[in-house]
Image (cartoon, rainbow, N blue to C red; front, side):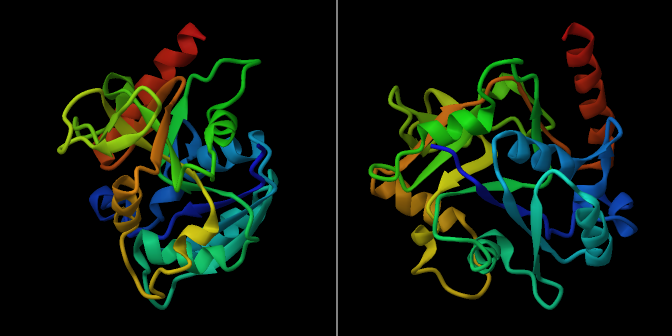
Length: 243
């Protein structure tokens, strides 16, 4: 399967990144010379995505100006200037700008490096893994030791077939959620129109045995504080030196 549309969650306040985010939205903070959101957008474009919705709130004018200049795919804006919708409400609002076909969901401040040239990308593999007949969502996951900037905790346990459970409920074969999902927009048809956390739907999928994951190739980075910028850039320099 090729997934041709996406939603990128980019409306957060970036409070832990202050004072940097006093004057710039977190997704536009540059890591190794590249705005964080461009790592996500480039990955989507490389995987064959043609249209992406990006939600905006904090320093929304800067976000819109940057997104207008991005040429890799068509970008639509989901405007949350009036009220932040949290990640779940943001998806419900943003999905209204897309078709009913399967969709990638990504975070604007989580990205990865180190994919193998000439092989399917992480998102291409995620799209191929996703099977709507038995999955509510398919998540890209990563081993804890292949992360930089993470809090040191596993999010899920993964069975041999990829089925996921909360790590706290089954503390073995732990994995970290890497910030990318393949899903069908219809999954949220019963969702409220106001702000809510998408974790509600993670738990619903787990209860139905329909939350699955597949493993990321390469190394995953999250940049949550000003101090983490240098750590992420050092990781990228190390990977480039051995590429």
